[in-house]
Length: 592
Image (cartoon, rainbow, N blue to C red):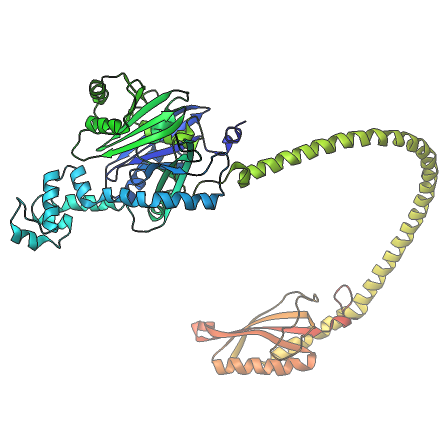
């Protein structure tokens, strides 16, 4: 049973597959329904600034209707190679140990691979200079005499950079050099850390205990840079793949031998497949060679038997007569991997990378590079463990349901016996409830009479005590206001809020104990004074006058304002509050 197929629901059914050569970026949104792949949207951007290219490409796709999601990228910066390791795929090493073995073998190969993206190679590859011009510039840098100039000229330019020298000699324009330099930034990185992905292949012939492993690797800094650029557009870049080599996953699994030739600009990649496993690879790159010539060089580098079927996969940008040219040169029946049923805008490599990402047929003949290395085995992944945990819980729930059904049967039998006994008890309870109801009725009548008595007592207290106290307080407040108001002060209004209701606790002053008194009276005063001195004196007089009444001045505010007759002066606002201890209050807020 293939656990990856069972748990394939965990991966998105839509995937943005991008392809770059360092000077352009194109992408297609592929959709999967089972094992069938279709292309939904496509975009193509011609620029050497890959950060801007990603922004424009994602923008075009979203404008067409794509909602965003996950992506993979095919780039020539990713090296695909076959290495031999003494590791049996049926007895895999721990992930960390396997990573060290692969890095040890792949690191020198990646360093050699990175030299292909020098400025000279890129200038020749883009057709800005010829191979002879590139050789002449190298001779000048190395101090050799050449046709471009004599020994003196060689000595003059021996310490110059290749691009600057090419520009000074008139071979290229500065814009062409800048384009190659910009593309170079997305094809190589100076950091020493690399990320690797791998896939097991067959045992090495005639070498017992050694196995072929298909390895893809790229500089970690370059991978992180691509991930960051896509992340800024809300897209998760899952992995990077080699630009050529991924179409091997599209070859039908069988027990025969096949040869696959995959061609891109100035590059060709030949692969021998035996019984569904890769047994040999041959990479060929030459900027002077035509695509069909590069394909033939890679094929002859493998030196396969002539009776092996040959498949051809190519980039969508290559000439249409490539298949016929390879057919004529090899004098064999070469079959093209036709992507037209999916879309004319996608290459076989792009579809092959999607096969590997979705774990479809042929997934082991392609290896992607993830940040942090390959995913651990299925049983070590958190999502797999979560599914297994849910399945275990479901099983426990099913067992619990069966047990509960058995328990319910036993309970129903006991319930029948208890119900019979309950009938007798129920009759007695009804009789007791009748007596209780009569007692409750009497208690209710007594409670109503007590409540009426409390109300009468409260009313008597209100008329005999509360009203006289209230009258005395109001009269005293008005007397204080009359006697304490200077001639420079005019009382505008006096209103009362929260009458006889304890509205707030008295404030706590610094270095003092908590004042638990509550406000039972509250008068808001608004006045106007001719001068600030008269306003402050008015407040001080009010504080002294209210003290014998057990009241205080609070929240006093003095600020400039216009008074009667539009005179400039100062507005005065404050509250006169009466404070009492909580113990002296009754439940309704009145004093005891």
